[in-house]
Length: 499
Length: 120
Image 1: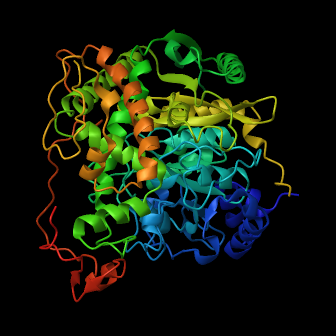
Image 2: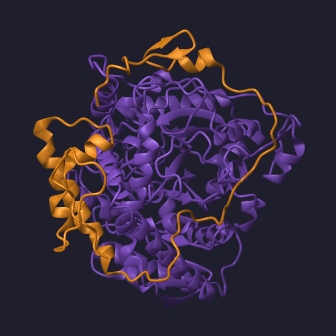
Image 3: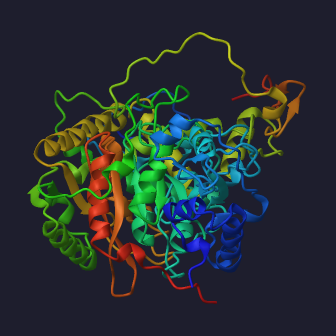
């Protein structure tokens, strides 16, 4: 039997329209699902202490029309997200709620304001519902660096859900959330989406305001939707996208109605497969799933060809200079003075900084702060940071060239299905390589989506990634929706976690 | 381009001397960088972190092979320059509310250990 927690956002919207369910019934159904499953999944952070937030949406008819709004049974014009509960990653600020980034250093930090994405969701009538587990400060690909302990993959509790938005992915996949927001700096939305069998979109850099997202790497971070199908992804992007004067890096580019791209034919669409993504390191099962996906897309009329992104092999190297450099700078603010944890035994100011940070940050955060500080330090800046920024230019030009030939690129999202908890924790480099296919999109700033495309023989989900030109999320939705409608992968759901 | 090696002297100020051998990251000195980053490590953890970070640096050092002559650096994916806003007074966060997150305040100030006695 399907409970209300099994519904997608668009299905809930239909039920509301017909007056066949109430907001309370939906929240109760989700709460019940969380009580029964989250003890094992650990996808939520302090769920019991986090109250749902909903406010009466302003009567801005025009706006709701723009985002596909429709009249409810009582005649009100409502956004399609009205009454839909959305789970929020623990690094996005919700006024009055703890925003800890799953770190000891931000324990008990209460956000004094709403992130712009939260304001937009509340204005659309959505319900802010629970905070999801993540790698500490989004540093990780497995959700294992969380101060709250790892979240688990609902398809196999001995495996990671991916990361860093692992809690968001696990909750959406396990039907303990309808949809969630994540953040993606090098694959943190797409890789967990792939490992948990859901849809994860990293929008174009600048498409969504970062105001109120606790910064990891400011030139790479983007907030994006994590949903059970492509339609919900488009519905959420409709609401959260757009220019924000509070984020001077957000782009003043018009936001189309992304649902208008759904249901369109992909006949004649040019899809490029970058040959560099299909070399050693890709597991056989993922490779085969991609191969059958290509056949399916060709069957739908797409024209698939090989392309080249020659600097792909350097992406991880560039990323692990650029991202830690920006992180070490962003994390300098956590010094035990204005907010967060302070070591009370320190006698001097310098000792107070050092011990507060030493006690407050976990191992991976420390590694990245050290890496970044080194790459930016006097005498090494040119050899590391400046060099990385120049290679970043080459990676970006690769995409510019490729998009002259094709409409969209197709790659695997992750090199393998979900790995075991503990498998890569001792070897940071191995962990870094799980983002090998997702990192380039952040470096180049292009949008990318991961959608389900198969299952391994152990019944673990496999994801494929589409990448498009900057601000061309519409094409991503078009091709993803066409593939999704022709397949059944997104309809599979994990069994109840057994004890 | 060959990055210079790191000095072994944790008290070193400014860039270490260049090393003709270009040995580089094998001499990565964690204590010095940790001090720059204001990050305390327990003695027992130093070795593990040092070898892990040195390993990662060795990995990213692959970039030395890439020719970037004449290539402009990309610091940001969007071609943004200065972004200005109107000079208007707007309500800002309430000070008392914001101070609730601080570990130690006195009046409208954040309180820290005495700075003038800090020898470093």
